[in-house]
Amino acid sequence: MTAKTVEKVKAVMERVYGPFSSTWKPKPFAENKSRYLWTDAFGVVNYLTLYSETGDENYLSQAKTLVATVHDTLGKTRDLEKRLGNATDSKPLLGGLRIGKPEDEGPSMSQDGQYYHYLTKWMFALNRMSLATKEQHFNAWAVDLVKAVHPHFVQTVNGRLRMFWKMSIDLSQPLVPSEGGLDPYDGYVTYRLLLDYSQDEQLLRKEIDEMRTLVEARYRHYRTNDSLDAGEALWLSHFYPNEDWAKQLRLKAGEAVDSLWQQGEFSGNWKRRLAFREFGTTIGVQMHQELVTSWMDRINQLHSLWVEHLFKRDDDITPVMFCCSLLPGYFAKSYKQT
Image 1 (tube, one colour):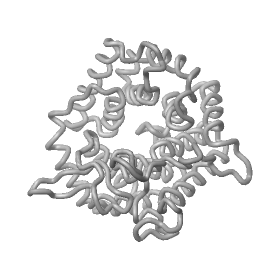
Image 2 (cartoon, rainbow, N blue to C red):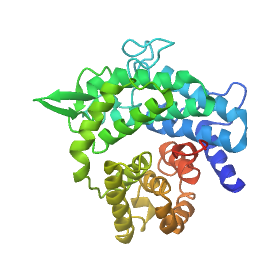
Image 3 (cartoon, helix red, strand yellow):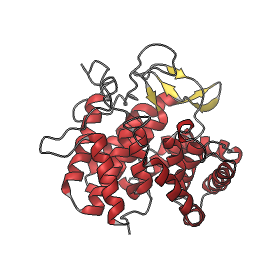
Image 4 (cartoon, one colour):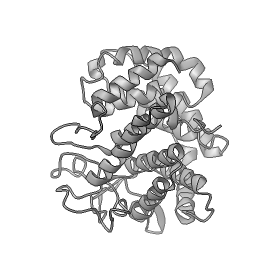
């Protein structure tokens, strides 16, 4: 990785979260959206990658502070008066984590609540924290989060195991009763990564078995025509690439991104496109060497385009995912583990 790339990531992360100081706290994304779980999961992993690439302990300190800030914000009620569910200061995730949406009323889609695929991203970030720091408690917190949310999102309904895409803040009811297309794979991969780190063969056994059941029932029918979905599928499939479900996701998602490129999905006026969705693709293809070969020129084209417009749509999700696409680091399975 070139020093120029590292410097570019450092500059963007500083603009998003604020320059480091002895009293550094991550700055709010907006007046009505101080934290956002998906973005901050990427932010944590980006800081860990910068720490690994530079050896600068300040980035590790920022990762730890960002984790604590998320737990003390999204792990609490919207008025920040108390932690969610049965969570405590030492066990901050026993009630899950809010999305961080500013809206609290209106249609269920726009309300604050808990998204399964955001929660698994945070579990992954905590797992990477343990890998980078060798501190067990981050992975243990991720396991706590699984135990807290899994029974609410994964339920047996009319004799069939199924998932809910979005739950209320207190996890008492579904806000969106449909299933997320990649949620079973998110859970299956993430839970297994937590298990791999812990070396406890019984850890999350029930939860992993349930996610395996969901994956087995669905993977043969996996198809997508969405750039972010395809990118996420490519990312998920690279962790256990020799398994049948992973081969199917890799095949269909790889076909999808190539087809989308040929159809002009990644061209045209940037104002009518969503950069973070395209970064989902550019991150995902970088997990597979055979795709990198054919996609590198395309990735460089997209990076060159979007670097000029990173903060036009938002100040958080787009630039932070851009950093991950530039420097995937700890998002890759084998990074710093050889």
